[in-house]
Image (cartoon, rainbow, N blue to C red; front, side):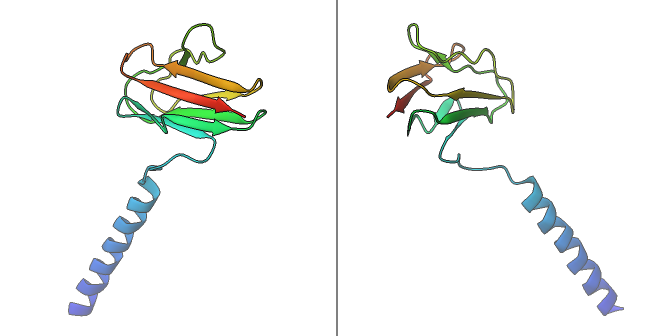
Length: 112
């Protein structure tokens, strides 16, 4: 009888372990990614080569944007939870951007 209880406990622990691994969220962005979470861009500054596609992903529950300061090329529109915006870089330079919904959110894209 004790052996059956032990096996049931091991089985349940295995299920919980698998569920935890499969439900785990990505905690850090890849080299050409920016995560939008906790009302910030992560990383807040990214440097890439011309021709690189950069993808922003809204990892939070609120709405956000990736909007160029001034007349720059970044214009994601509204990103809801889990939505993405991709931009393929062209001209070298430094592009600053912000979130239209959260004035404290700022980021920088440097294209070499």
